[in-house]
Amino acid sequence: MKRIALLLVAALAIVATVAAQTPQQVLDKAVAALKAGGNIQASYAITGSQGRSSGTITMSGAKFRLLSDDMKCWYNGSAMWTYSVATGEVNITTPTQQDLQMTNPMAAAEGFKRNFHMWKAKGQIPGNYAIKLMPKSKSEISEVYLYISNGSYRLSSAHFVMSDGSRFTIKLTNYKTGVSAGASTFTFDKSQVPAGTPVVDLR
Figure 1 (cartoon, rainbow, N blue to C red):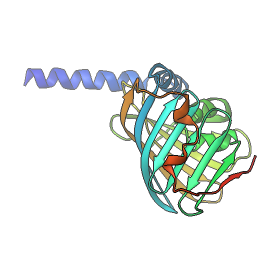
Figure 2 (figure 1 turned 90 degrees about the horizontal axis):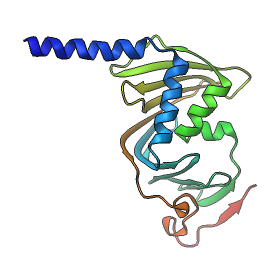
Figure 3 (figure 1 turned 180 degrees about the vertical axis):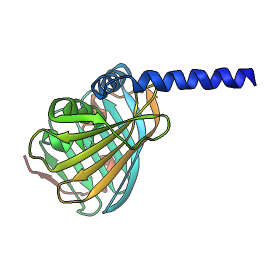
Figure 4 (figure 1 turned 180 degrees about the horizontal axis):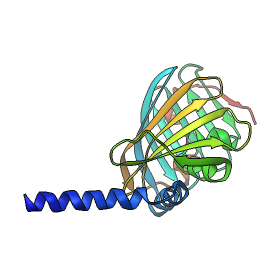
């Protein structure tokens, strides 16, 4: 019984330590944790009005690769290649910061620090610090709720409310740090799409 009581006190102390921090401090630590992880891989799930998509994301700083059954995306820091089963083609674009905020956790965290007001959110998820963000200027994004795990400061999920009223949630699980990921990981790999898939440069 005494051991259980001590564990409960320790758990409460961890929660109290996180709760005493400002949203800015928590987000700063989340960004630092992403950077410290080197090459990171995680499973992701996106749920919204257009359905559900899941797959894996590999990140290295600003670069990332998303792989799922219905979409594949590579971003090398300047160009983005996006393959969609729905369109049957690969589009090459130069994404905006707002585009990146909705796909790459690193870009999202950095962008939120610069362009959003933030508060501690009222709705909490056990084991997470919840932050509510609203844009400082006109944006397609109306509100964002970030859930950052206590202790590890990993972004576990993000809930977006768009200006048109649509909503979607991104959840990240199965973090792996220090994974092998060279430059080619973040550039278009034609072997990942059906042979003969057209590539359209929209830059």
